Image 1 (tube, rainbow, N blue to C red):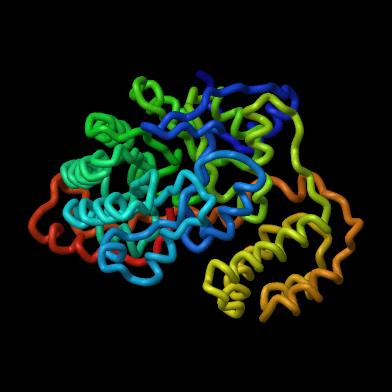
Image 2 (image 1 turned 45 degrees about the horizontal axis):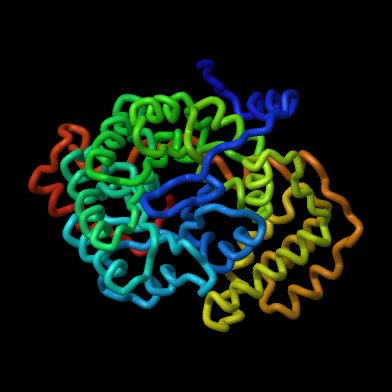
Length: 402
């Protein structure tokens, strides 16, 4: 299997040799996901508003923003909002973050007994320093017994109503402390329905290139459960390249869909064997952006001010590559209400076409590698010591990344 080490080379090679790809439906316990595509949980992004926009373009599994087990058990209002799903949204997918098996079990029990989810994903991929420095997120699988306890608690509680549990993780802390193969095998032995791997380490954060060879190795190591690949999928062609390269059963889409909910239409078309792709002109992008803002008003209980503050971060993503002047972009990034937003969007050229490659490719800032922030002595052993057991309880924060 030839390694693909440069994202631009991947795109160019698939552009020269377009192929049609047909993958079977993704089976997660009793759930059948006809289009084997998963929207990755992203804090502050994958709320009900954005999930609805994505679902209208294509099929797949649309996971909510991550919620901490502790906050859920304590029934904090924001956590209950995060796990809310629209009445027509099915399956209802929730991602949990936890560092404590007891709290994990209580949170899953709540979701199961109160019929709040059809699928539960466990987050072991967060690279944010404020989480990892306390032993959470992508730092946690290094502590193998703790990892197994959390996964086992979730699977046992979810099994009472035949709800599938999946795991999302990274390759490891850094190149010298890789955990994905051990963690994948442990998760499989405990009964998870699938494992998703982001092909970067914690140290890489979002920099560099995702290691698709590692995803292929995990696929080979876990032949009897679905394995999903995540990292550097910016287009349907990238998704097809990953499947061909790794043999995964499906793909997980994170930053690639920011400002582009129609990417899920491209993905469904590609997985169904169609070459049709969405290439929206500026008028369509403006209308979608406005609708996103309207849906956010509903998401935040009618709070228009909060919704418009939230949508501001999407401006650069939606209008990437389009002819939108700097002054207008700045005004959109400070828009106070829907009426002002409509007036600003009406200033755009409705006849401006899709700009091509300028609108495609990576979204957001990749940044640079970051020195892993870990508790003192974390890497000395794969087991927790007494001090670390006490410290890690502080890792359950309300918000982090994925």
